Image (cartoon, rainbow, N blue to C red; front, top):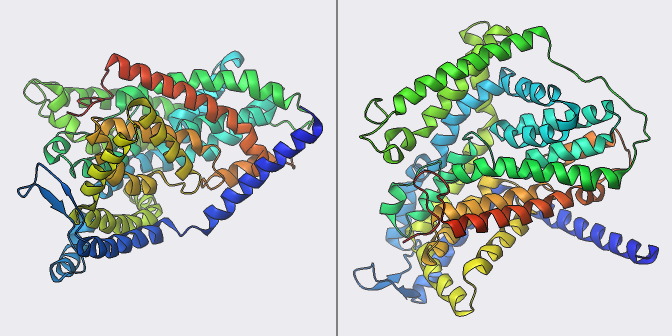
Length: 510
């Protein structure tokens, strides 16, 4: 490629990134966006009702499904009467708040950040890249810890080993952001997205939605952890490092290893995890434990009530670590740390109120079900089914992710539309959520509007003052491409084998 063509290509990339950043910055705040969407549903219901829009629905008593007008007398009464219940019954609200009590204590006591540091500083030099990517993927237990701890730590480790620090930063960032949806454990993301998926599935089949559980993607995401670790390691060592070349900055830093108190706290937390896990397993044994059910684990109360399980699993080790390291000296410290965790969720609570109104209006007006039936017919008529439909949905998700960074905000808008459409094509809600999680994660690392993107640039500028949006995106783009291709291939193989995505979570809906 000539210098002129290369310069033209780089200019085009930079203009595209600038355009994405300008458009994204002009979008309303997600809370405002949900109120706008709710208002749009209200107006649309009145217009569509007056136009007599309807679809054939064999499940309806009349055989026809019509739009309910929210600006009618009955509709206005419904909006006033349901305002509180739309908020309190918003499925992800309680699950996220309760789950974050446990995860928040584990994070604020220092357990999660210490465990991540221990992971990446204790492995042999040959495995440091893989450890960074793996640690980044696992950090989705507490996303903030991954961005704030692992990303700069990756740069420091690589610099200390005489490798290019930006390669270490990129490896950690790829794991944290690109692997956000994968984990060996259930995280707060599972009930957050799962609740929205379950609510959306009720539009088509309430009985099916009733038996769904939050661990619906668990099997697939466990396998994804190892797949992404391998791919991320290869991209870093075969593409990113050779492209960056030898680091000439001369800036080296001492790696902050664990001190004796942190090691003692980590061992105590590890022992408490084992004891807690044994206790939870005993509760879940079918025919023995009170949460084990009558012999079928998949339908057991344990799986249907994972939120308090997650609370206990993270809370106890976090508490033990805090006590051993003196971060928790009394019950007041615990209360303060839990209070601080809830304080950080204030924005989410407001968002849940706005999203709750939008989702409730969307369902009550029948617009969601009408869109699902009409949309499925349209896509089938143009021949967009099967794998092309799957790829198209993921492309749409990835594109939207460039402008709206919040995973929950996007899914709250998309789930009521796409989950029913995919169900009409024979794909389960669990499968649609898997597609969303893949597309959302892989494009996180190249989205300038991702909340931590600017922070990562600041970390990178410590080693190279010239790093900007374009530099970081061009560095991370190989991860997005590689993660997307490999993850889709694994998904297609999963489909061909007909493997469940999680407990009682099939790929196909019947």
